[in-house]
Length: 170
Image 1 (cartoon, rainbow, N blue to C red):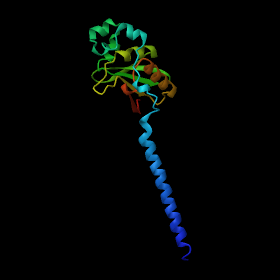
Image 2 (image 1 turned 30 degrees about the horizontal axis):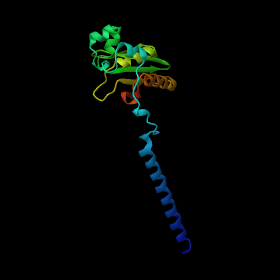
Image 3 (image 1 turned 90 degrees about the vertical axis):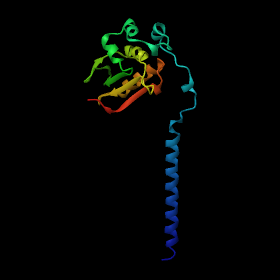
Image 4 (image 1 turned 180 degrees about the vertical axis):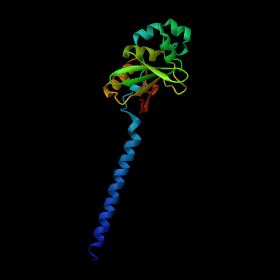
């Protein structure tokens, strides 16, 4: 009986040591997860799409008044969508809709991706720097989400200026 006891203690110590190593490895992965690839892409200067850059330089796009937005060819609905300085985009399957808020509720109207990118260029952003809020329905396709994010990134809207809500919109 005494000869089995040290074996039990050794296997328990080995299991605890192995478990500790696994937990330490998981914590290290979670800690270093946000570090990125180290390519320096996040420090590269943002470039705006040509149609936004020709209408408004990027340094004055944040200081646009409603009259200037109207002169930029925005419809009244698009002006309402930008009135809170953050553009809300709803993804439904492969379709994109812009959120137009009034006092009581939000109505969503279809919009093509090129126009969304242009409108996002006009968004000033909130106090946290969020310029685009991405909402999804349960039917939203991941490919549509990725296409939108790539289009916004190519327009110079950084990932830090996007907010994606975790809950689905009915």
